[in-house]
Amino acid sequence: MIVVRDTFHLKFGKAKDAKALLGEFNEVLKKYDNTPRRFLTDFTGEAYRLILESTFADLASFESTLKSHFGRDEWRQWYEKFIPLVNRSEREILTLVE
Image (tube, rainbow, N blue to C red; front, side):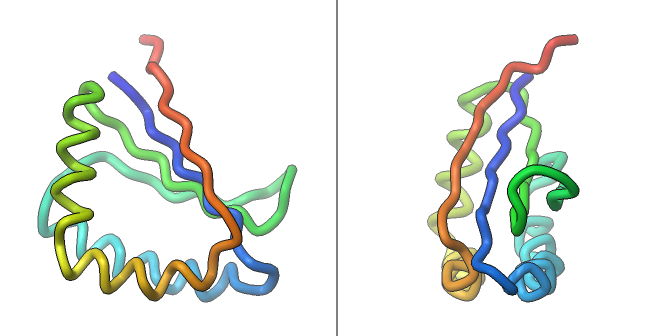
């Protein structure tokens, strides 16, 4: 099992706007898969971070999901709204120790 953590470093003052788009994001994704996901925001450390944490059976499942979502117009339309809120992002792919 792997955990993918996408950290978005938001522009100053844009956290509310980014959070407002999460409901729309969830609706888009629910149509296509049931990947366990959760959103986290910073409490300590760097400020204005929004973290998407997703769990996949393996790397192949993760890659398949990426291809599926990135190819959809609905996802791209949502992403175009989200891009202006973000300064930068990073991705961590971790192995879950059970």
